[in-house]
Length: 278
Image 1 (cartoon, rainbow, N blue to C red):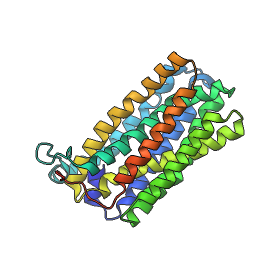
Image 2: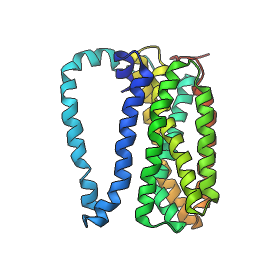
Image 3: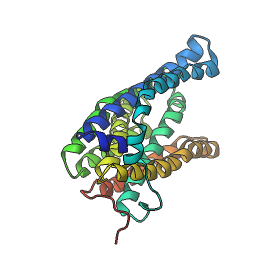
Image 4: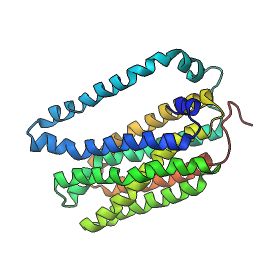
């Protein structure tokens, strides 16, 4: 997608914000409706998840018209890993780490936040909706962050604001026990979450000189980044099994958000990635 956006549209930030907004909106519906589907309608968790397979079919049908442009897309976007490797680029690695660390936080919170809230005395259905609210809180920032990023060559200011907001939200989640405090923490974390995923996708285009380089950077950042993110929920589950407490995991989240901030300072510089850097 970043390669297609870079090749097709002039306003990279606006288009990235639009498709990220749609992603987050549908994800928020999934988080909020899955529990009512499973329990309220007595579908069970299997049929509750099967329901979302319908949208996969809709997405495939919507994408079929794009197959007519296959030749043009292959020519412009298809990466050449052997020739255009970005593994020696510091900026590429910083973008990759920013992508991976924000994904780590996203999937950990989506997977375990309901359990964390239930441990604080929140009803399971309300906890599911609070996860949905967290994602809804990220909708405005998911659109705004890439839009602003496209207007300025340097995105460090945006990264500072979203990172501090993320750390504040996670800190309130660590120490809060009242539903009001937990709600505020979720709003801060959600707004930061939406901004960080949208900005990471925008950086894949903004740090690249052309569509082909954007596709290469996207391949590197999303494959390595999501590999890093994949260990997150499992690791948090193991930590809870060992300590029987969510405190160590929440401290880990704050440390990850801090590392994301440091990686973002490098990724937000006004520099293009290069296949080789001295």
